[in-house]
Length: 268
Length: 305
Image 1 (cartoon, each protein chain N blue to C red):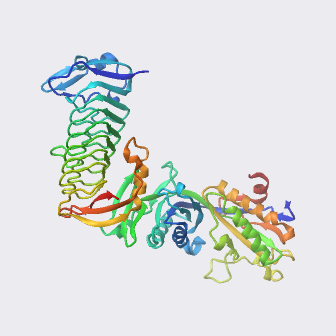
Image 2: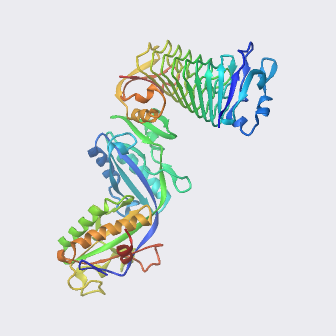
Image 3: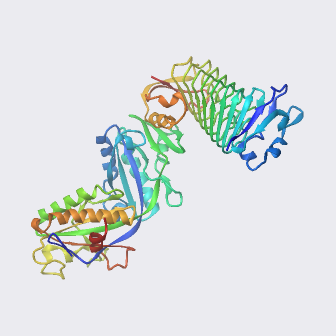
């Protein structure tokens, strides 16, 4: 049985909302029905077969080929199954995702994993700004699940993140973990300015000491037992994070201008 | 039934329904895991006055524990869930939270219909006075409580299951040292059986009781029928050559576990045999009317593995 495959015919001029194309919504539908689904694109509606060549059968395993950064809301609210994107993806990737596996073999734009509640999201390229962050008007960003970014992330990664695991193997931009409510973020590369700005709770794991603003305070070097449990939980992930061994860290707490219960742990 | 000169009485041990839980206690090394677990399972021989019956089930290698440190598993049994939860909380708070480097984790997982989740570190977290931190890995919640030696790490809950307590057998010997040697051999064999504990000191109890007393205030008193020094005074169960009787009590998660432990223990006693002064193995019961579980000695020695 072959995966249900959507091949983008040509790169669209206008952005397209792909939220209807998730495994749970397409299960049980024939190719003809799928071809007739309408996709929002600006003030127009486009049929799926105007945009994609559709083939294959298994709706639980969807592949989007030739994908480009104009395709938004890929995997929105998906609950189960597997969705693979070959190429880049647009904004709001995995928005409010509730389960399943979403894999992007390319770069993604802003607000990936915003409102995500569960499941696994693997971005094999770079992520844009507000990775796992809250959209305007929302009080919480990512609320659960696991995100692995093989490349770099933009500014404000984990903004108002509430729960879950956000692992960035490359660098992260400015305001990483800003206004973070809880959860865990890991960055193996460098982070920019104002790291942990307005952080209330949660853990930011780093490998090198960032420039810290005055309301992040030094708590000294410690061996923390919970880290061995955390790293054990990383062991099955397709990521460099699976290989971290040491649980000796320099602990910084903050942001004391807010609540001061967040922590930045720098691996020693 | 006679094995190696030891008479196995045609009687049964009468056991009761209990609630049981398991906690995995780890520490920097086995010495400190034992320090925590020994404190936690101290004064926990009988539910009559201790609230719970508790004991160390076995040692765990670093590969078997959640945080990859050496540890021990502790089993705890009580007559009801409320007592068990209360005792677990106080013992965790006074014995594990206080013990340097110790951490505690859930020891029973599984189907929510059979396993009730009860608080392990759930309320201990408030010791952190607001500085406690919750972390979730693999669907489980853990608490990090800042303490003077660093951080106390504990899982939020552990599992509670229906269990059985009061499996037992009596070793009747020609002398006190011989009775004790046989019990020590039995305990050594029984400690290899999973899911059971022998809650009394060293696993052995010398003060078996009967229901009732001549004193109004006492609900139980010495089992005079098995007291060797009263042989001539009371309606005794003992033949002239018996000079000492000791009992081994077993609590376990299932009837099968208790049967296996009783089998292992009685087998070890019988191996010493009449040559070492062991004459009889019997069991304690209340006529079969109080406890729903009956462990027939001859059946266990004939049928079980």
